[in-house]
Image (cartoon, rainbow, N blue to C red):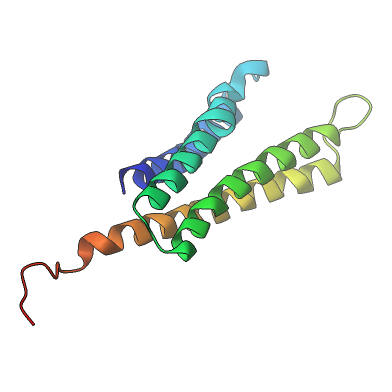
Length: 137
């Protein structure tokens, strides 16, 4: 539950870090540094830790699979960002294809947040269910 909550916080902060990069004036190479570090190191590590904890907690296979989905979406994010940067014009200016791929990067980020919210909901379910230990049959 703590790992999935930290993962959701990291995904939410990614939007803040992207905005910091977008609104930094003048724009420079390091404008997206926080966004990049979080996306390339922190989030993948938290994804794997969340999956590990789900397996150690003996969560149902469906839940463990759900915890792996954000890791795949993070890998897709890296691919989309790389492709968006690759599709620039000869002068380094944006192209319609590069901008479209960049837009897909944002959409994938939104989808990833919703998936991680689902992971957190699944992690909270056992805590919300009443314990059977104190009841007699």
